[in-house]
Every structure is written in C-alpha cells, then in structure tokens.
Amino acid sequence: MWLTTNDLSLATGLPEVKVKVGLAQLEAAGAVQRLGDEGPRMLLRLGPWDEAAMQTTAANVEERRGHRRAQLAQMVAYAEANACRRRLLLAHFGDQSPAEAPHCCDNCLTRQPAIAGVPAGDVSRLSQAERAALIILDAVHRWKWEVGREKLAQMLKGSRAKDVQQFGYDRSTYYGRLGVFTQREIENLIGQLITQGYLKVIGGDRPVLRLTPRGQAALLARAAIPLHLPRTAEEIAQKQALQAAGGTVYYTHQLLEEGLSPAEIAQRRGLVESTIYSHLAQLIAEGAVPLARLVPEEVRQQVLAAAAQASTPGLSAIKMLLPDDVSYGVIRCVLADRDRGREPPPAPAVAADIAAFLARPHPRPLAGPWQAGWALGFHSRFAGADWSRSEVGDLAYRLKYQSDRAALAPLVEQALALCAAHPELADVAAIVPVPPSTPRPFDPVSVLADELGRRLPRPVRPVLVKTRRTAPQKEMRTLAQKRANVAGAFAVPDARQSEVRGQSLLVLDDLYDSGATLEEVCRVLRQAGAARLCVLTLTRTIHADA
Image 1 (cartoon, one colour):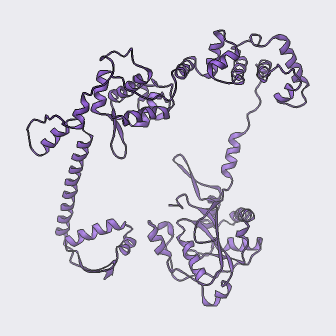
Image 2 (image 1 turned 180 degrees about the horizontal axis):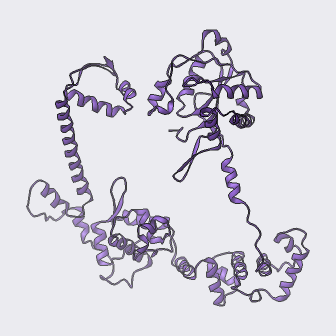
Image 3 (image 1 turned 135 degrees about the vertical axis):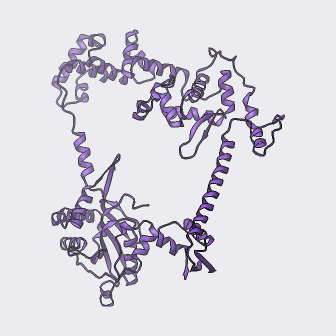
C-alpha cells in the first residue's frame, strides 16, 4: 500500500521522526519491504514477522544506543574536566607519553595564573568585592552537593524558603553571608565569576556550578578577583547596620538612640523625612519611643484639638486646621500616641474580595478563522498542585454530563453579559449549534442555543449535520489526530444551504480545546456561503493555546 509518514503518525500518535526510525528497524528485520517512493508517499509491503530477527534488530539498536551514549559521556567528561585535556586525549588513544607542552591546554594555562593579588591566606587587604568573590567560590567548593546558580544565591542571601531549609542549605557556613544583596544581585555576581572563567556551568536538565582550574587556583591563593558590586561601600555598610538592627524601622530607632534628629536620620539613610516619621510613628505606637522626645506638649495639644474638630477623617482635614510648621509626620506621631492601646479597626475583607474575584467568570478570547471568538471562561484552574473546575467549568460539566438544567440559567446569563460587552457576537442573523460527538437524548449545546436564541432574540438554525461518527477530541493525543478526527465530519445539507448563504452566524459549542472542531465547522459553513462567522463556547481548556 501507499503511505506517508503523516499517515502513520496519525495512526500511531507518534511524531514523524519516531515513525521513520520505526520503519527503518522494521525494514532491517524484514517485517516491512519498501518498494519505492513517489514524492512523500512510500510503497510498502508487509513481510513475514520473524520474532528472532526482531529481537536481533532490537539488540543491535540498543547496542548502538549504548555505544553512542558512551561516546557522548566521554565528550561531556572531556568538556567539563578540570584535568589536563592533552593528557585525556593521549589516554583516549592509548598513548602514555608525557603530556607536557609549552602551550598544553586551557586548564593547564589557567591552573596557576599570574594573579595580581595578595599573599596566600592574607585576606585583610581584600576589598568587599574581592571578599564576596572568594565567599562564592569557597561556598561552591565546600558544599557537599552540587548546587545551581539560583540555589547558591538563595543560600548566600539567607533565604527562608521551604526547600532551602528542607535540604539543609541553611546549615552551610556561608548561609546568609551576602545577605546585604538581593538574590538577583547575588546571581549577577555569580554570573561575573562565570564570565571571568572562575566558575563554569555543567549539566543538562539541571545545570550546576563547578570551580574551573582558574577558580581553584584563585581560591587556593586567596586572590583578589575584581567584581563589580551593585552597591557602594556606604550603601553596603548601611544595609549591614540595618540588618543588625533587625529591620528598617529598628535601624531608625538605633540612629535616634545615637542622638540624631529625624532630619539627620533621613540624610544619613538617604530617605525622605516623611518616611522616617512613619517609622517613628510605628515605634511610638509600640511604646518604644515616648512622644515627648519628638513633639513638644503644646504641639501635641494643637494636633489633638484639630483632630477633634476635623469634619472628615484623614490627615489632610487635620493639617488644614494647624499652622504650616506642623508637618504630616508630627501629626502621625501624635495620632499614633493617642491611639496606642486602642482596638485596631477591622481589617478589610481582602480574602473575601479575592475569592469573589476568582469565582467570577473571566471570558477568554479565541483565536481562529472567524471574525470574533470568545469562551465564557477557563474550564479549570490549578492552585499549586491542586486542580479544580472553575465556576463556569462546573456549570458546563453539570449541564453536559449530568443533564442538570439548573445549570442552564446562569450560563445563559453569562453568555448574555458577554454579548452585551462584545456586541459583534449578537450582531448575527442566527445561532448555529455544533452537533455533539456522541449522540445523546439531552444535547446541552442545542438546549443552550434555544435558550440563548430566545433571550437575544435570534433564531436557531441547526443547519449542521454529522456525516460520520467522531471520537471525543479529548481522547486524541496529537493535533494531527484531532484534525483528522473531525475532517469531513460535518456538512450543510443542500436543502438548508439557503439558510447559510450570505448570512452572519454565531457558532455555539460547549468546549474549546485545540480549536480543530470549530475550524472544521467554520470551513464547512464558509463553503456553504456564510458571509461572517463568530464563535462562542462555554469553556476553554488551560492548554487551548498549545
């Protein structure tokens, strides 16, 4: 018979590359004979099935695969090695001669580089950037497992992420040693060491860091490695002081205890004075700082009187009743002292608002060979590893698989709201329901079309018929299979083509997956003379764009 690799891909669900490999193995075993080619078509004939020959072919394939894996492993080992590459090449070919040469290999040339630095073991003269470089190199060298760039940055930052603690990264000597930088800044420092040849990235799916010979030599010599730090020395010192104080608010408290005024603290920290006063207001509310230390008694009385007279809540109404020299920061401090010990106002129902937002439908556009296309929402969603149907997905499931008519009304209401937001969906002459894959007494799409048509109002024209039975699209594994499953499966009978010709139609279906069904339906309707097509589905799968 004449076949193409695409035919076999459709039949087997395998990519064409695997089909070609499988054919070659079957030919080698004599189970298939290839008699000739004509363009993409192959003339194939089945031969006898010889189990022994198939086993021999399979064994030969596995032997070749093992040989190639071994070759690949040797190449990877050569590329990732820190040893003398000349020695590795000589050993590969069985040559035991000495490997010394004036210009031996990149590893030998960088193993003992002429590094401008300080005497071995003396780190007192190293700058912050040079110390950061050695910290990173030594962390890679000391860690008992291989570590990737992101995880190393988390460890050096002092991350409290669950997996950092679960796998013991927080027990490293260097845990949190570069905590003055952000994780992204630390990753940038690691990247500089990779670019300069002190670190290398090895591995495929899960790349890890390893010292290069140059990095090994630099670490041994405690060499001065130039790195560009993302912050100045003064910024780093401030960050270190902030961390030692326990956070930004408590660093402000520390500077206040050192005798600095709010203005001087703001200048020292490079912040605006209003930010410092917000810190002080928090400290006053906690009872850590007495108000009298910052605000004279007469000013306190003025602010309290203005707060009592203000017609509306908020600082602006109070500020309008006070002299210009009384700042918003002072007002915050006085109010924080006044409210200390009071019950806080109830927190806004943020969680309830988020839940309500997630529960609402979120229509999704559908791209395809039509003028406009929409789905009422996603069929399902993930929260971490937990899968659940969306609200509209649950309604669609109840209508389709449980014949629950109670789900019809909310779906129609959502469809009407979508049509109101996108008038092009309702600007049609009629609604055309898509026939189901599996005939059933209760057809949810037809029921939905009838109710939506009554409410718009628009006539419903069931002009599409199935020419053959199709399998559910969700059972197909590849896009080629899905397209083949519905190809030629729909038609518009001659007697009903006058209801389509020159008309603007809304095609209605329950689920948008790959889009293969709607594409085929639209092709058939256009062939019958439809002038303009829009599509509407209840739900869209998460992988609809794949």
